[in-house]
Structure formats: C-alpha cells, structure tokens
Length: 295
Image 1: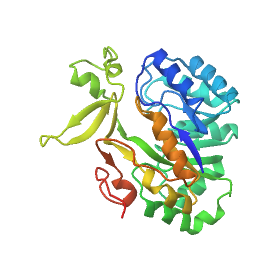
Image 2: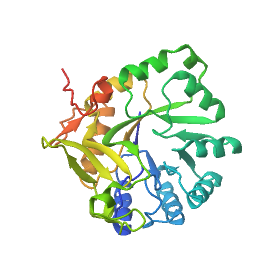
Image 3: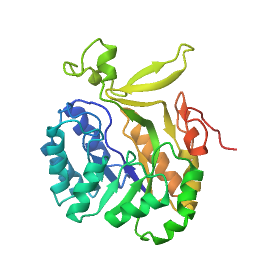
Image 4: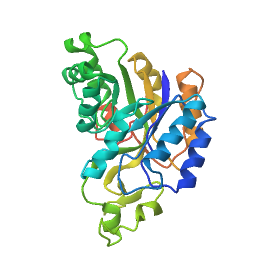
C-alpha cells in the first residue's frame, strides 16, 4: 500500500507552495499530484512552474502525476489541459471527461480523479478499456460501495494492474460552481475577486445558525466543514486490497499526518491524530458530516 499527496486545493503564495513541496521530499509519501484543480485564475504557479516542480520531485524519488482542472469554462483552460495531456513525461490525473477523451485518443494511460463519476464496475471496465491505470474513488462512496464494485461480475474483466486510490485525509471536495463563493462573501464579483481566497489557506469556514461547522468555502469549491480522516480504517482498507491512500495538503500538521498513516500502513502502533473535529460518515454509509468512532 502506498501513500499519495493529492493536488493542492487552496491558493497559497508561490514561496509557501515551494516550501511545502520541499518538505515533502523528506517525508515518506510515494506519489505527489501537482497542478491547479480548482480555479484557473490562480496563477501563482503557471503550467511551466508545475512542470519544473514535477521534474524536481521526480529527481527526489517521488512519482509525480499532473492533475487537470475540474471545471472547464473557457478556451484558455482547454489550452492548458491540452498541454498537460500532450506531454509524455508524467502520468495525468483526469478530473474532467474532456481530459479522459484527450488521453484516450493518444493511447496513453491515465488516472481518473475523484470527480470522474465512477459508481459501478461497468463504468470502471469501460474506462479501463480507454486506458485507465488508476482510479480515485468518488469521495461520497462508502466501504460497502467499494466492495460492491470489487465483487461485481464486470470487475473480473479488469486488469490486475488497475490501482484503487481512496481519499483518506483532508477536507472533502464536495462540489464546484461557476460562482466564486469566497468572492461573494466579500461582496466581490468573480471577475474582480482580488484573489481573496488566498486569505484563507485552509478555506473559509461556513457555520449553520446552530453554530455547527457545515462546509468550508474555497473559491468555487465547496468542501466538508471538518477534515475527513480514515486513519482508523487503514487496516481494513488493506484487507479490501486498496492500493493507495490519498492525503490532501493542509497548511499545518502534514508531517505528523504522513507519519501516522505510514505507521498504520506498516502495522506499527498509531496514536490518534489531534484535531478539534473529524468526519468519516461517507465511508460508513452514513451522512458525510458524521464521525463514526471505531468499536
């Protein structure tokens, strides 16, 4: 079982981003996903910068995957996606079916990100024929859903080399919109947003009238209010033959998170991660906002 670091979901400064990935070179994470997946207006790092960073991390022994934008709205965004899908140095994570089409037409293997709606073994088999090498299960699916996919007759036709990756830590990316919620909260338009999302390196907390944290706003993206944490489920996921656990970059505490998950993978005793609140309801086939404690 491997550990992956998902694409950065937030707008951090250029230097903070480079510092973060410099730290990752010394930590036991096997796969690193790079690229802007949320908003194309975020240009602290341009496509060339991401490619240079990918080469640097590869030289440090990491497997690098380039992630595409999730919501395509403009020709300029298509141009960037085409550039990522046309290069031959790195595997690409497709987060939109347009990227799947470009990659399959080239006959190159690809990763299906969590925003490609794979809800059954038939979809998995179809994409496998197009070149799918690895899939990231949609975050709202449960353990029971995953087992159902693995047990379905169509799964028997899948290549043994097809890898399954589970989003295991971080704020869940739930939805995307053409509207920018962070700009709206500051009474700004999306076109003149002033990049206020950069003021919230871990997103803008959104509470209910009952003062419960319900969501986190990250530009055009809506995330879970609490951090999703499947650390207690690592042993069970190994039994299910999950290949990769995805950890989503957070501004603070990633060193400890990575070491805790590595210890769990290798069967060492693990202490609970410190946090005010976690959620894991989706994995247990419950409302996603819930935290189901291990028995």
